[in-house]
Image 1: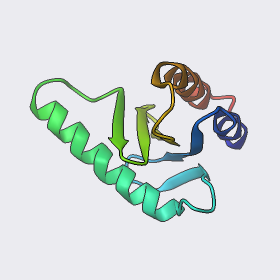
Image 2 (image 1 turned 60 degrees about the vertical axis):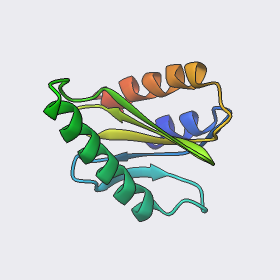
Image 3 (image 1 turned 120 degrees about the vertical axis):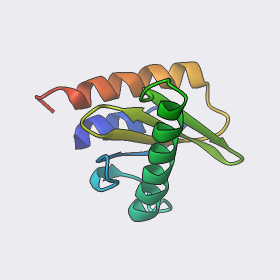
Image 4 (image 1 turned 180 degrees about the horizontal axis):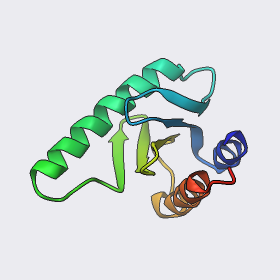
Length: 114
């Protein structure tokens, strides 16, 4: 898991990544020193829970990917069914390219070999 997150963090524009459980517990974190694990996990769990319940309430079902754009960056949450991949990226990134890398990492993390 560490290797996949380290490789994802090497992508231009990615500041850090982590895997959390559905309950918001940190399974693995490769965030920078400026991003506290517990704070990122807490906001991630809240956004995931709110997004999931809101979308299901509208009849859309569980989300596959949720993107939160902020003034100073983006948070990308990917539902891996076994947990969630959380990626923190710079605001000015090419979202199309980085999503390819994020989806690839999520597929590898779901693989039983990782």
